[in-house]
Image 1: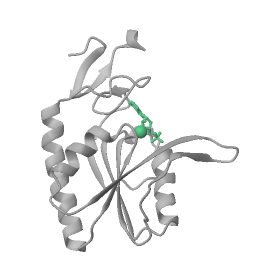
Image 2: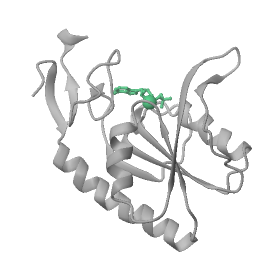
Image 3: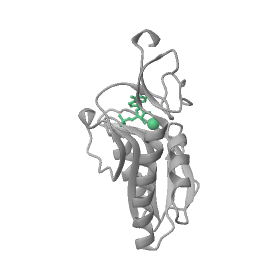
Image 4: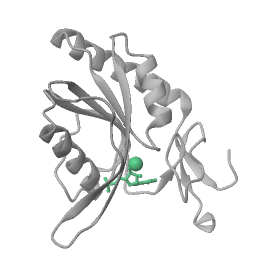
Length: 177
Ligand code: IMP
Ligand code: MG
């Protein structure tokens, strides 16, 4: 275990098993619809989970990435798009892939954005969900694990851009913050 980790919350084996279950559900959904989904990973945190998940999906799909940050605007939460998708999303089925949904502000705006671009269907798959922290309504379709209000690192999640490569989700030690 990494020296800055207090405890492992979810092991690599648990993530792998849960990703297999989700990949089956998600694949069944798109097979039924008969569409080729566009899997959109939100950089950078979603990358490890996205890789695990999509390799277990046995339907044709396309990949793209988006990098956004939400910040407090004058009236509401604004979305800054640091990198947009390069794919035409009009009429497409979009599967947004995220590391964690916390207040929900980011995802709320990202979903709105894809709807405005004319996506036919927008679904969300997240490794982690912290429902206790929700401030903005988001319909989360596929959740890996629901976790309590704790700051976690690993499997894509960072603290000051570090720890993203840990192969598990862990709670950071207070002295490392
Ligand atoms: P929100 O749902 O808009 O509040 O923001 C979610 C974003 O905050 C995620 O994409 C993460 O980048 C970050 N975040 C929230 N909770 C954690 C955590 O426990 N560890 C690391 N990053 C987090
Ligand atoms: Mg993120």
